[in-house]
Image 1 (tube, rainbow, N blue to C red):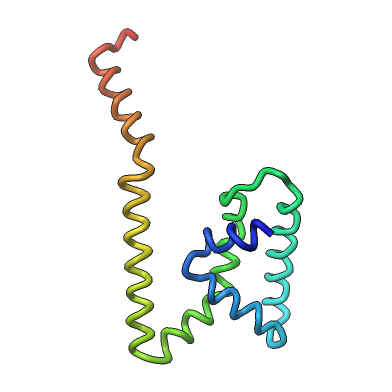
Image 2 (cartoon, rainbow, N blue to C red):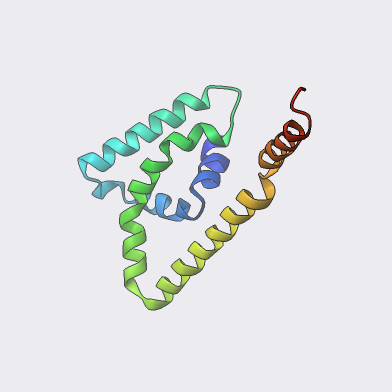
Length: 126
């Protein structure tokens, strides 16, 4: 259950409610949508048997989740200006997270590479 309770919400983020709503509307799925859900389900099931679990193992199916959520997000945005405002706020929140993770949290490799370049410039023989 780890992938369902922690993995998918972590990688899907704000798309998680749209995924759940789409899953609950299974009686209205087209054949293509059913196939996408089947692929995602098989992928998650196969990875669930492994003892080693990581969020990154679910990243290959994130584009499929985006396809599944697209119609729901569009309908949500078209219903009301308040909902459009919430969508913009959600996008801004994601932008904040991306900036933090890219510029602060995960900047270690960039700093290490800069330091290596400095050392090579000052000591080219080593």
